[in-house]
Length: 556
Image 1 (tube, rainbow, N blue to C red):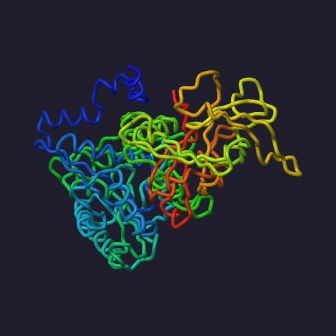
Image 2 (cartoon, rainbow, N blue to C red):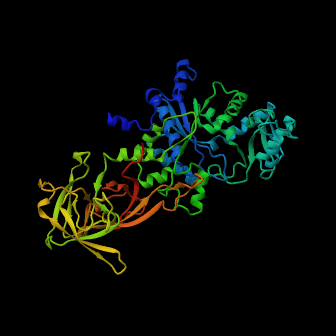
Image 3 (cartoon, helix red, strand yellow):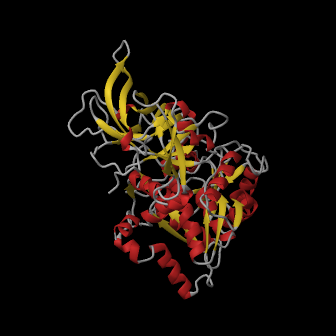
């Protein structure tokens, strides 16, 4: 039962016993034959930055819904803004989706449909449903009105169809400057929904597009392009985050006025908010550009690229997305749940290594000078099939500095003067002398060992309460440890601010078997946490490990 309860952390009783509300909608549509037993979803990111953990939730949802219902899922790039978009982001998004374990059924770009979108806009003009407006962006905003009062019609709203067609073609042909004219839908300036007050659907932008080059200088707005892309691709269920709920009437209006039969159905769900970080590509991009982090794949970043480089597994992220479920209202998820999922995924499948992060030398004064013993230790106590390895032991070893105190408080069971502890897999040792430098810093401990206490000997004449990990000094491998923690912390006003201690770098020592590490290899460092051989910095004799997550979970 305890194991079952662990697996259900983060899931409500309702989520455990019933489908999510989106699946319920799909079930009803399948039952009624709305889309002739088809389910076709899509993941439609804008390539204006790297994807983050919030996008992972959407990726998992869209692809999983398609898989569960034996349908299809497209990857589509909403590349309608040439100023912000770049092929670098396109390639990174493809990599992220594949890394998470999904494969798209169709790969599309909004820019693939620019000609068809333009033709649809011409159709709307001919129906009297769209017009060219000369108001500036500031004037359009002023004319729009407020939530408590209606807007005001543009003075250009009643242009003739012929004039609108001529002006829109001139816009396409590059005869006007950026911002000089826009195309707006003619809906209702008194609508209680501000999105329906003659929204702009085309603007002029004389910028080179990553996919179409300089072929176009007019570009559709997202609220116009989005429903058309879905319709062109025969999408059945268009899954969006909650901020698009107020845009749904416009989505439906566009498809109705363009006379699409059985149009896609837009469904909104709550986006992911996570403690100790931010879910805004704009903010994350600013961190990159300001040099606050090393790049989009900085292991402190909540980007999928950052999580991947830190050492998170796709299985853990998919498990996390499954546990948080699909909701209709926004909430904030504790980062500790993601960390819990990472531990649960790694615990049964990675090897354990003994590593000293902040080394303190220990000399065992009564141990034979030239003697070296090799102790067998389990690679993973959760899985005997992973076998054992041998670690060396001799007269000089390293322990972690935090495992020694000169003036220990009560219930400190590790090493201090006169105290005896167990070295994991080896012997009991007792601290006899403390060596300091001229500034009073402890530089060395001198201890004795009891040869009768060898691990596995059955010695039980006396007990000790502390067990320490260690590394043999003669065979130790130098490593660099990037101890990452949360990117953001809350200040006194409960606002997220950058954590000045989000990265601490240590020069430590590891047991010699660490030399067998390959790029992208994960380990549990005994008593420290889970670590990952950095795929960029680990090369040659340089061993650099990123802390994925600490060992103990605070998640309840």
